[in-house]
Image 1 (cartoon, rainbow, N blue to C red):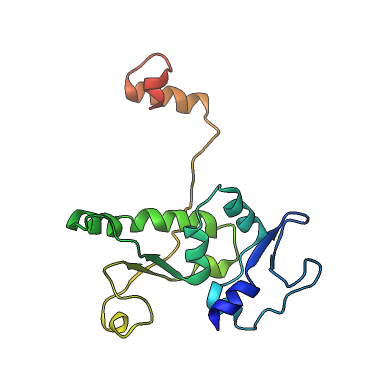
Image 2 (cartoon, rainbow, N blue to C red):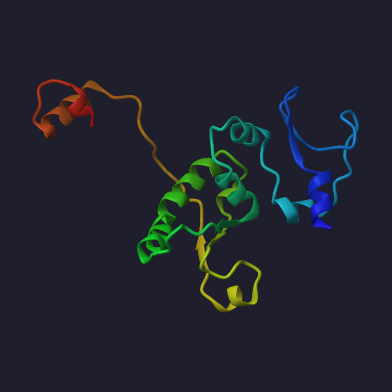
Length: 174
């Protein structure tokens, strides 16, 4: 039974050695984890990612999408509109970038993983309707160049000339 496995083998962050372990019957005993446990919770992620998630630095949605290979938006809004549904599909590029930022520090199979996106109005993965319908699949986007923190004097002068200003202030930075 999936419920029994989740209750007996839930992943717990051990503060003593900063590792994620299954919840055992006794604190000093290791729990017996089923061999197909990854089919329920997804692939195991690095301990540092669990630590960031437990600390509240990143949302649970990103690691969950990488581990389970599915992104499910199952909570409908109070008023379901065409604009809201359009927003959910327009978020695809941002989700790919966020997944790419995390996946670039993980094992390569996470960076190449296909993730099925499902919204509350679409059939859930694994159902018969999902096989007949067109599924939205995203991949973590590989970001080649991020924000550059080393700003040279020449680059600063060029940007000041482009904006037509002679001093650096908050308006210049925005």
